[in-house]
Image (spheres, rainbow, N blue to C red):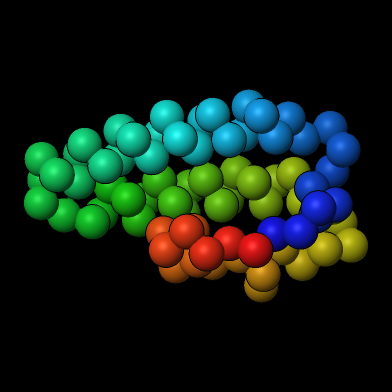
Amino acid sequence: MELGHLRQEADTEMLSKVFWYAWEGAVLSAKLEKSGAPLELVGELFLHHVKAYARPENNIGKEISGTAIASGSVD
């Protein structure tokens, strides 16, 4: 994601904290369940939440995928 893709009122510090808190919980759940499902769920839900802050002129859905988030390769 590039600078300017989110509306100005998006609290990026809060979004980053929510992601990491949820992701850490998903990591623990994935270990307990021996499944990647918790990670996939958190990734998809977070992307859905972030898209709500997308600037109207950006088509953020095509630029970010759950795979990119999971691999840590979001630009």
